[in-house]
Length: 172
Image (cartoon, rainbow, N blue to C red):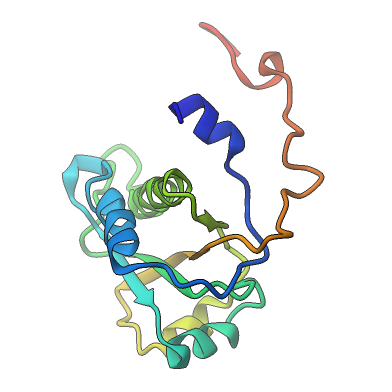
C-alpha cells in the first residue's frame, strides 16, 4: 500500500481480537519509533512495552482505552534528555514522543495491525503503578493488535476540515 493509501485507510481500532502480535511484528514497530526524528537528535523517548497480563492489567487501572489489545506501549520522554528551544525554553519532549508514537502507529498499520493513540489515561497512576522515574513524562498509550472481525472506524473517521480551513500559504 502506498503512503497516502495507508494514512487514509488507517483508523483508531477500538476492538481487538485475541490473536497475538508476533515478536517480529513488535520489533518492527519499535524500530520504526527508534529511528523516528527527534529535535537535535536527542532521542528522549522511552517506550514501556506491555505484553504480559500483569502489566496489561495495571494499565487497565490507568485507562479504560486498551480495548482488549494484547500489546500496549506507553510512550514517555525523558525531561532531562529533551532538547530545549533557546528562544523561550520550550522543551521538545512532547513533540518528540508524539513523532515516535505516530511512526509506530503507522508501522503497525503497514503490518496489517490496528492501534489507537490514547491520551485518556491517568499519568500519576501510570507513574505509580509502573514505578516510573520522576524524569519520565508519560505522553501516550498505544494499544496494538489485530483488529476484531467487527472492528470499524468511528463515524467521525472520515470527517476532515477542508484544506482551506487549515492550510495557509505565505500568511494566515
